[in-house]
Image 1 (spheres, rainbow, N blue to C red):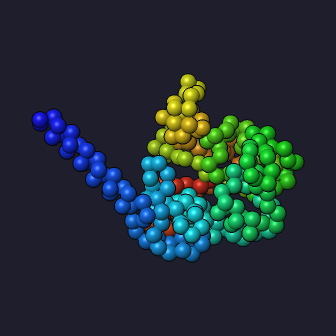
Image 2: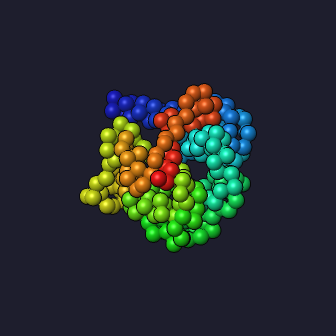
Image 3: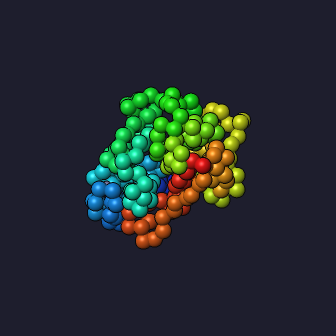
Amino acid sequence: MSGMISRLRAVRRRMHYARQIVGKLGGVHPRDCNICGYSGLFKASGLPPRFDAECPSCRSLERHRHQYLWLKEHEGALRNKRILHFAPEPVMRKVYSSLAASYLSADIAGFADRILNIEAIDLPDESWDVVVANHVLEHVDDRKALTEIQRILSPGGIAILSFPLALTFEQTYENPAVTTRPDRDLHFGQWDHIRYYGADAAERIAAAGFEVETFSATEPYVHRHATTRGCRDYIARKR
Ligand SMILES: [Zn+2]
């Protein structure tokens, strides 16, 4: 009897937990989208859900709005440039293509303007001024990719790079024993990721011939625009 009561209590606790989650999926606190100007509740995104993550108007996520904070301050450096955008996120594609003199989106497969392998980019040396690769490097051989990005950038050109980051890891975590989808999900946070970047991320990028700056957002922008706390973008300038 007492076993049944404790099971019922456990079910009730889970129901209560589930109701709390469902109640927040449509938004917790009103936010302002710095990309499209929408103000109001944001939707949850991801599994497990990240509350207040997605702008219902332009569908931007936390990291897009984070990058846009940097972009607004550096529009001049991007305007009328040749911009190559890997794995283009629709909302950022609009932003970058509206600034560029020429814009090309690229991906290993799918609906980009051009099918390109970032580890062996089929484009001439020094042919682009800006390369954007958000959440790409953690999927690929980043040493090859960064060397290729450096090769196709014009002198002084910049790469805008972002990826999942655990800054408390002194070294980027790679593990050759982790090869299966479940293991990659467990170790790296997603089945198709092959590393988790740590505090040495800037050094890894610099090794390919870049000067590296980082961009992190602070308050009040983090809560106002619902960006991720601790999010960091890397701006790599070709040496
Ligand atoms: Zn928006």
